[in-house]
Image (cartoon, rainbow, N blue to C red; front, side, top):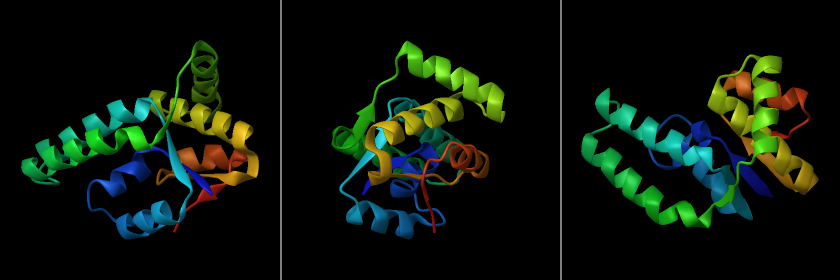
Length: 142
């Protein structure tokens, strides 16, 4: 099974959160993991926010970022192009999603169209999951 991770799911691999252990188990049992290129920006911003708001220690955020830099090449990074961004804009309107969530959804849908039943989306955002479900994207969750 190929897993598509949005940022809410990928973060669980780099900061201890609810369902982190479950998410790690899914990664080890998957054939590989795919992410949108935009996930890099979201991960950097989210780790910085966690450090600023003292959800995690600054040293832990730095260590997580360093680990992400090392591991980033192992993820299948799905590129953004004008057609995908147009679709993301449509999804923002259709589902009332935030900008980057719309990009995540458009990327997940593209991956699903290309991979069919061998892909599932792992996401911990209820609104994004609801939109994915309406598009027929298989979801994987605890």
